[in-house]
Length: 459
Image (cartoon, rainbow, N blue to C red; front, side, top):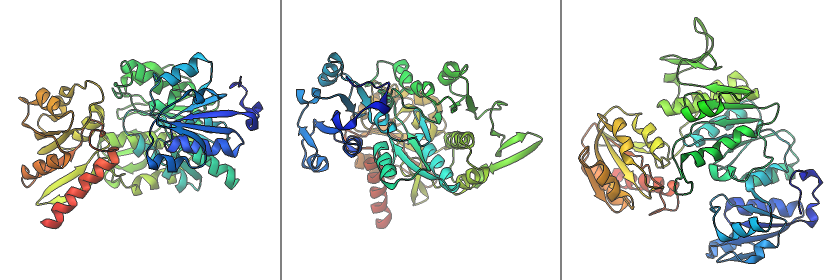
């Protein structure tokens, strides 16, 4: 049996690795495992031609998971696969160690790791952090739940023989489920709000996976977390080697803020990092993201100049409160990445009034959409509810707001457009997953932009 407490002693040439899932991370783990000499077997439920092409020359099976998976010393489980599938249970029964792709890749790098998790804002924050590192002259490799799979970046690092890399990782709760010795130099936790409750029993089970990151920092490392988040504040208040960030007046923070700027040092003699008006990232949620990235970068030793320059020059990422354009004095914003209530709340809160809000898609687990009512009052003019969750959204919110239902996403967009008047803002911030009509939130966001472009050209 493989001893995962003594990774450095493993002879990979005699090791059999089964990989469950042939997505990007699974294939990348296979390539890394093959490079170090392991015997790789990939098992995938999907049997599409594209999947088979991606698997290439690896030994594999498609169309389901057979007992061939069990002929292994280690199982690497892709993050999207639930823990209750029969083959996982059988691996557990037979004592086969199960690890995530993140855990596996970490065994083959000694470079610093800056890892971030949270419910909302992760992608913007890690992109900021990545750019801060680059601006400081570092070789930063962005990976995990965004960018390249961690295994792919580690393999590139090995082949390139580069000794000065930094790995900046965005990590989901799924990727943290099977970490063992994974140990970042800087660990960041942005926030905890209800999400993925179709996979977890409740928010406590979900939070437990996120909070694992706090237990895995190196002895000389730092934990950076949001002091404004009640779950994090209560769970992490006694954590040693921790640094907090906050949107409130908090003397424990390295970076502080007032009504116009972020600064460090004494309030009466501030060392200004940036003025709010100088960044393209708008809204309180983005201010939180900036503070998280800046605090992580500072804790790692990135220069103040690099942090400042990145904040000033950073362009918002696609699908996260992305301004698409204006037609007939109506602004259109694509926030397709807002797949839960907390993310949609942050987006809605960024506007003052006259919002036409598009909600809907695939519900992630008996969502209470009424949670949006307080933030929508005096801001939302009308709601277009679409897709699988559309009728439930209409049932919950009709009466408090004008709610129209459209089954199809494009029809929902056109309905929002038809009901808009000059001065309005059409906001796609769906508070739901995209999988009822799209492969992912990016495809949904791209469709939003595509429909807008057609309307703009026809105007």
